[in-house]
Image 1 (tube, rainbow, N blue to C red):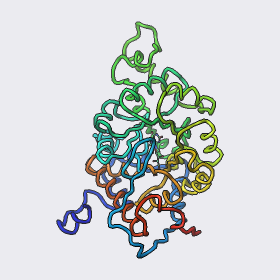
Image 2: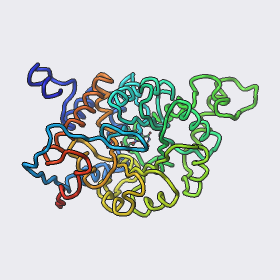
Image 3: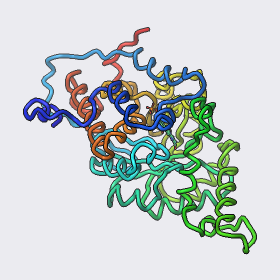
Image 4: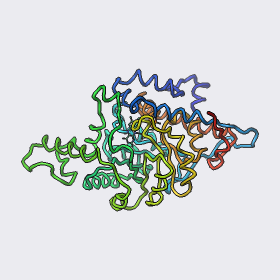
Length: 389
Ligand code: FNR
């Protein structure tokens, strides 16, 4: 479709098909604080760079004349659903920073293409509105920043269940915020607003939704809102989740898969298996938490060796092209998540830009599978890769 539009109809796409040009163009369209918030990483940006470097250390070794079909089958099964491709929207907070339509636009496009959409705890759009945009029956997941307050946790999970979010993604690497220098220098912390939206602080009965009353009954609505937000922030930050509490979380969530996001070692992946967790997402939060950490793809082979087949393995961090998706799948990931590329797409007229970016990445992935000599995902394995320094 993208080729035909360009060659036959001379229609250039809404945004570039190349990541670097896409990001450069998004930067021109966005307020500086929003661009910096998304582009930035922790500290000196070493982990952001390591994520990219890790992809350059693997090269694809294509095979020829293998009698492959003109159309590939990229479908896969994840948590009981058959999906057209192993691609999921990464949870990203406060998306209205990038376009007024924010989460509605991204959820709509992922729904249209039948790919899972993950709603962040720090969303700028509520559970129901995102579910509506995502569409009836579309696969949607909910990402939890796990609060130390059980009432608050239950209230998030209840809303997620009521609105058809099927998979619970628990982010375990951000119980305190990394040293984000670009945001610190600007005093810019938009996710706090996002958390407020999620619990309905936009209306005056937030404390009731939360199931507790943080202030005396005669407090004004505004005082109650402030107190509720303060409570949410203080119980959502600074206290690390621990393995033994997963039993409790399983009970709160009830039926349905639980996935831990932010796992970076084979040891932690094995712990997840021992605790009966359904999946992990190998992720360093796009380099936004620990500066100088291991590049995400660097950790993939050891995790695959330890837990492949015992637990579903997701991957994110530095996916910028279809070839990158190919490398992660060839190294053993069951699915990949897209973060920043989708945001830069969103900056280009909302859903139009998101659709273009997602379709481009899928098209390039599809071509890479074919041009390397494969037809289906099970054929894509590490024999098609070579490690270089
Ligand atoms: C994130 N990420 C993230 N993760 C999460 O679990 N909850 C969240 O609310 C957010 N919010 C968020 C905002 C922004 C602006 C970015 C860039 C990232 C991390 C995200 O899910 C994913 O791990 C990374 O984006 C992957 O890295 P790349 O490929 O985007 O560089």
